[in-house]
Every structure is written in structure tokens, then in C-alpha cells.
Length: 348
Image (spheres, rainbow, N blue to C red):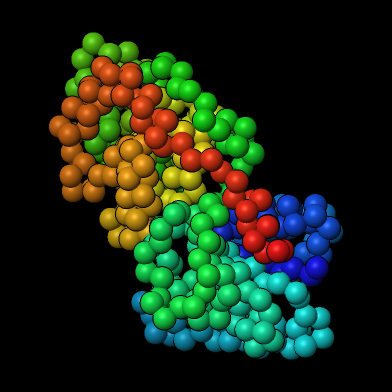
């Protein structure tokens, strides 16, 4: 079977796509991956050996400038036209899109030629690009059991598959907490200013507890946070980049961070309790954190309620009650069979 996989934009869209592409290639299918220039190198480095890679000219249309919005729409239109012509001569049997604006041209071209199309939504609230392409999609596959914002008129079949994660997380699935009083603070690739402001002050208020902190932050904040922790005799490793994030999550007894889809699913795959502070302007993160908190695995706390007093009290209580941390860890665990489920859904 010839299967076209459309992805692009960010690593969050690319990694799940490549994981599924690899699984489908192992099953003997012929794979083509289309993507935009921003992540072309990532796709070429991670694709299955015999898979083809196709460049898509596309960018997001969320810019405030009308000129940039028009240019973005023009790029998508040109790429869609090119793919319509391409599919006239070499038509895939399946189209699989992993979200982002780089997937829109491929989904539209597949619709023109009536190619069965499958769409994967990372977040617990459907993204703009996916919401737009839902009208042309046969099946929507989701990372979370429920997804907000699916158009009421959509006729797509909705299947909960989960989100692919790296093998390191799968291998550590449902491992017990080590109870070494380790806290991981991570705000994504650029860090999160509110975590830098609140977390160190809260930890400094906790008395008579030997905590070990790994704190990922912006490069310009590393020296300041190192000095703060040292001045307060807190054992802390402050980094601008964590090379082995899977080990950092697996080793931690508690994670404090944002709630991007990949982060939340990684926590669920390993089974780790967390305090999640969604990015205030991002409804996707709020929905992801709410889904995690509903499991009982941790806290979904809005930025305006994430205070030094609240966090100090919460940390004090959690590390006074290791049994509670264990219960949260067990509740957070969700078996991750996403790669197999997505590949089965596409090929059956």
C-alpha cells in the first residue's frame, strides 16, 4: 500500500508522524512524507530508510499582518495545486495528516482525488489547522479520550489512539517512584518565566526537607537561579537544555511544568505525578492539563492561582505523604500503544 504522511511545523507534529511512518514501513508499505522547510532536516534524519520526502511550501496563517496572512494562504494554495497534479500521476492509497498548516495542502489534494484520509490531533482541544481540514477527513485519531472543539457537522469517525512517544518512555512504562525527593521543573524548550519566579521561592519556604531540583530555564536565567539555589542551600542542577528528558522525567518524584501534548502523554506513559501550569494564552494546554488532572495524576493550576504560598503548601503536603505521591503516579499511568493503534487504523 502507498501511504502519504503529511507533517511539519514543529517537532511535536514531526516525531509522532515519523514513529508511525517507521511502523508502517516495517509492515511493508511504501511511505512518502511531506513537510515544510522548518523541519525538513528533522524529517530526513528520522524517516524510514526507503521513504521519500516531499517539500511543502506552507506556513501558519495566524500572523497579525494581513500581508503575511495572504502570503501564507497563497503558499498553501500553490502547494495544494501542485499535489493535485502530482496525485493525478501517482496517487497514494491513504493520506495520514499529523496537523499543522503544512498538512493542509496534502489533505485537500487527497480530498479532490477521494483518497481515504486520516487526521491525528495531538491536543485535548482541536487545533485550527485540523479544525479547518476536518471537513475532508474520514477518520480523526486523538491523543486524549475526549477532544474539545470538534465541529458538530463533522462526519469523521473519531478514534482514541493516544500519541506516540519515544521508546525510552515506553520502556519505562508504569515504573514506581524512586522516592529520592527529586523535582523536575521544565517549561518547554524556552523555559517558562512564571516557573522561574514562583518555584524557587516556594522551595525555599519548605523547611526540614532535603529536595533535589532539576530546573530547566532560559539561558539568560541560568546564573541567577544557580545563585538563588546556592544561597538557600538547595541542591539544584540548573540547565538551559536537558539532553535526556526521558531520564529526567523517569527519575523525578514530581514534575512541575507546562502542559504541551507531548509532555502530558510522556507523563502518562511513565506514570508520574505533576503540577501543570498551562500557558495562559494557549487553550490546547489548558485542555491537556484538565485531562491529566481528571485522571487524578496531578494538579491543573492556572497561572493566576500559581502562587508561592499555594505551591509551598502543596509541595510540603506531597513530600510529607509519599503514599499520596504513589497514588497520583498510579492514577496518571495510561498504557501507550499509540503507534500500533494508529498503524492498525490506517491499514485495516
